[in-house]
Figure 1 (tube, rainbow, N blue to C red):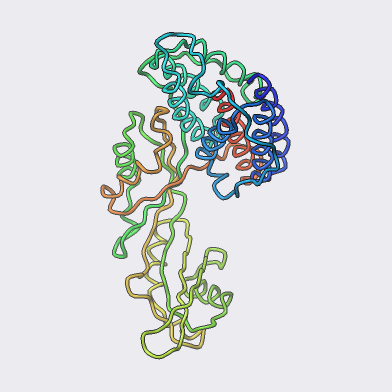
Figure 2 (figure 1 turned 120 degrees about the vertical axis):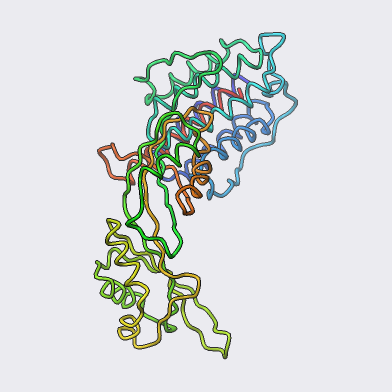
Length: 385
């Protein structure tokens, strides 16, 4: 098993270099095959490697679309007593399987924290969560300390992170997460009646947090679907929509899909339109003007209608910064949906990186994604081995 662990560390070094190139799927493929070959060469069951790889994938959205690797490694190895479930616990009452299961839960919370851009905060949450998990399972927390210390030594990003003061039981560390929420309202909603304080209170209740979330209204979106002549030029359609609503073309997004009419064989096209505006007053004006299709009909030279049931409706785009304990950090996107009823709309949300970095958004996202994959792989390697 020591041989497999050493080889696994070499694999991590290789994948770190690949991740710096920005190709997460290629880096993961390299790591997956390298780790399986390492376990096989050490005479260990490759099922142990598969367990770790599967767990890492499950915590990493960036790997969701990566195809499974076809590795050219050797066989799965002979008998081994080195599996995670049968490892010596160092304590007669230690349920190591339960401790490792808790570790996976802790890893989910840490991954969410990493997505928010706070590496040290995420690590602090993970460290305390893991120690509590080992303690609750009747295991020596020194086992967790050894793994944490080794992981720290392999991660330069953790070098400046202070060791947290863990309670040892009920008080989990606080994690800061940034959510980008979309509150979609019914067609009869007036955007100028929106109250950010009502949203904040509803979000606080739905999320079950003690600290009041910070919310910033970033933009408004007007959503509408039109039925336009078949074969319409999308650029012409965008231009016509921009002119009709007195906005820049850059504020208009159009997606289309062919649609067969009930009578005859003639096709028309459904155009799903999103118009982004900066404030509620403009959103109200565009919501009204987008319902008038006369200018579009004239500009396109054919009949344009608003699709029934898809009349212009407003959606508020809100950045919500939430402070929660680690146990909730991985589920905030789902919890905030329950605030919809209180604000009169339907809420969807996604975790987003904060904007404090000096690089571009795509560079920051790539850096956080790579750090998240790397740290997750290191932690899980230490847990399995």
